[in-house]
Image 1 (tube, rainbow, N blue to C red):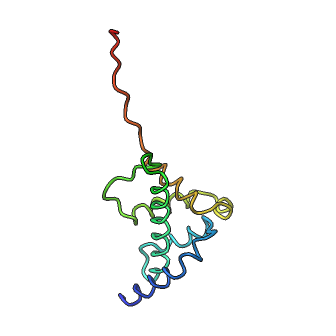
Image 2: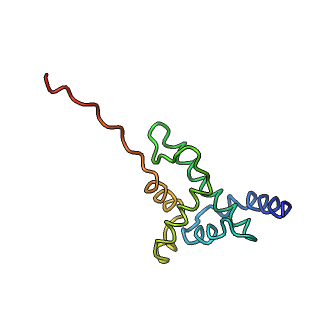
Image 3: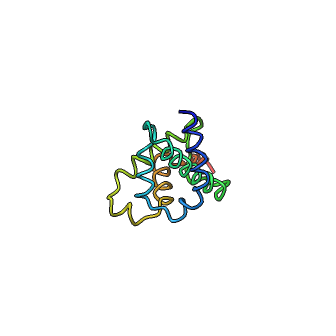
Length: 126
């Protein structure tokens, strides 16, 4: 079992740049259906790696003003489950047209929005 997972990880790592370019939400949805399923380790690795890559890329791009506030301790598998739920709710025609990255960002932003800090109270005596 460990050998299969190691082989799957190597294959996914080698194919990652080729597979991630131009990925539709429908293709990501198919991969994410494999998360946690026996015999679907390569799909699971691909899904979680893609989601993790989107998070890392956007976080780097938006340092200082995050697009989302994922709670500390949240695993990439938990984020992938949120993405899968989001993708499942989208019409198939929509998933076939849109880039996976856009739907990953939408799912995460809606699940873990950053709420601005409340403004300090004004001194009304002035």
